[in-house]
Every structure is written in C-alpha cells, then in structure tokens.
Length: 147
Length: 147
DNA sequence: CCAAATCCCTACTTATCCCATAGGAATAAT
DNA sequence: ATTATTCCTATGGGATAAGTAGGGATTTGG
Image (cartoon, rainbow over all chains, first blue to last red; front, top):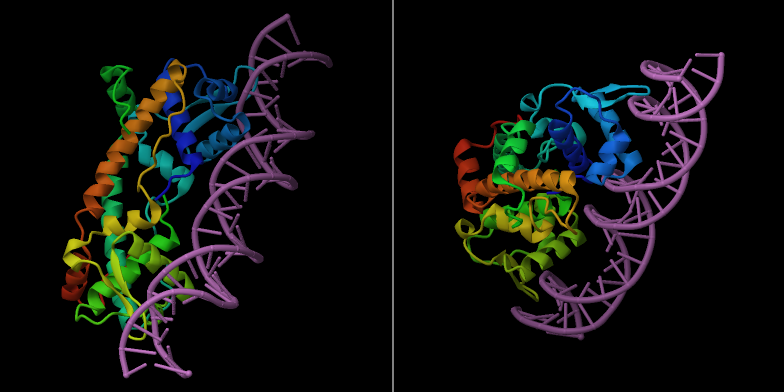
C-alpha cells in the first residue's frame, strides 16, 4: 500500500502553491524546487502533468511560473493523488469466470477493495489544500512529529 | 496507492483457508494453489511468511499442510495485508529539520498520512476473514461484479 | 531585435524491487 | 523405504519508478 514518490512530490508542490502563491504572481518551478527541496527537473515533469490534469495553470516566459488552477479550498488531496497515481485502490481485473472456490474468494476480495475505496475516498476527497494549510497554521509549527 | 501482488495472494490464500479448512484437516499448498489459481512456488513462500507472522500453522510430512492459526473471526484483513506489505500508509522519514516553507509543507503531509491511516485502519482492522465469508455467502455467488 | 527567463517536450539511464522459478534439504506418515 | 509435504536459499527476468539531460517554444524587457 504505497504511494509513489511522484504523488508525494506533487502534493508537496500543490501545498506550496496553496500557501505561497495566493497573492497572484506565478511561481517558477525552480523556486518551488528550491523551497521544498524537490529535484528540479523531476518537479518540472510533475507540474506538467498537473497542468494537463487541470490542477495548475502555467505561464511561460520571463515572469512565468505556476499557479493553482482553482482556489486551494476547491482542490482536494484526492484529486492530486489520483492525478499522479490513478485509482487509489487496487482494481480487480477479472479475466474469465473462475472455478467455484476461486470465484467465491474473488468476491471476498471485491468486498475488501470496495470498503477500502470508501474509506480512503472518505478521507482524501473531503480534504482540501486549504484545510491542510489552515490546520497546520493554527496548530503552530512545533507540533506532533509522531508519525 | 498499490497493494503488492503478494499481499493479494496472501489474502486469497487466507480466505481460502477460512472457508475451506474449518473442518480440522491441514491443507497442502499445492491444493490451495490449484483451487485458487495461484503460482505454486510463490505461494509456498507466502505461506512461509504467514507462518512466521503467526497467521497460519503448518504441519510437515505426508498429511501436512496449512491451517489458520486462529479462527477466521479472530484474524483481520489488516493483519494479513500488513504481514506482507508492512505499514499500509506512507511513512514520512523526516531526515533533518527543514527550512521554513518545506517544514510547514511536511506538517501538512503528516496530517494527510495520519488521516489516511485512520481511514484505512478503520476498514481493514475491523474486517475479519469470517466477515468476508459470511457476507459473500449470504449474498450468493452471482452478485455485483461492478468493481 | 536580442537576451534572459521560463515553460515544454522527449528520450535516456539507472536502480530497485517485485514476481516468480528452481533445486534440494528436513520432516513425517504409511 | 517411499511418498508427500513443508522449509530454505539462491537466482533471474522484467517491469516500473525515479531521476537526468538537452534542447525547443514562448514571453518579457531593454
């Protein structure tokens, strides 16, 4: 049950934009990379993907950079993660009908995946970038390293 | 957000044992492999791991095989998945203290991971092998391919 | 127009690690 | 003994993730 590094980087970049670029100006990838300690060229690719998924807007040229495509309160964590990794829960590719025992087992699996999907979606689809910024801000910076 | 094939196979084997071997006799790996259409030698390794984690009991020799270590109602899906894949949620290995912006971002991440952990655990740690068997059995075999 | 800054695209490399296979040693029943 | 099984270790192949590199396209400012 692992999330890709790419998805983590994407989320970090998005959180950065939500916090840092509320004031209009576009933020160059190089600066995001430096501030958030992300590999620069890799981040470029990620931002490009995020743009294609409609999560950020870009602007080229001398004063170019990136911005959230919508307000931070309108972008959920789930959108970001799924934009990078696809579906968040294992999908059962049922080839053909199976024999009796195997078939019952696969039904059990489906049940698990479905419940997992509900649980995970319940979290990430109801959590916006703004929520994150707000919570961390009000908690202060020195709290809860226990994960 | 992907589960390893190994974890899926393990869960399938455990569900098989929960359903099929309630009546005492140990079930050989070869038969599990055949019934559930799992790669035989790979399954051997998986069962060996499950044994080391205390989830199945094995018996060697001519009438040997595997059995659940406890009743199916006492083994959760979460135990099985974690036995194979380790923690189900990304763990943030915080190296050193970061600069201001990166640090705030990492706190946001921690918040996400923590909420995800709660959501996922809430599902898999409250779902036993017995639950799965019961649900599927009472629903009948021809239901709900929609995942 | 020119230079600088930036996004954009594509190909490549590298490393990791999952998935599986193979062969045989230990153990137990008949 | 023979047969059926678990148990252990090593190995390979292949996919995929993670990151690098280089250069083209676009915009701003002088």
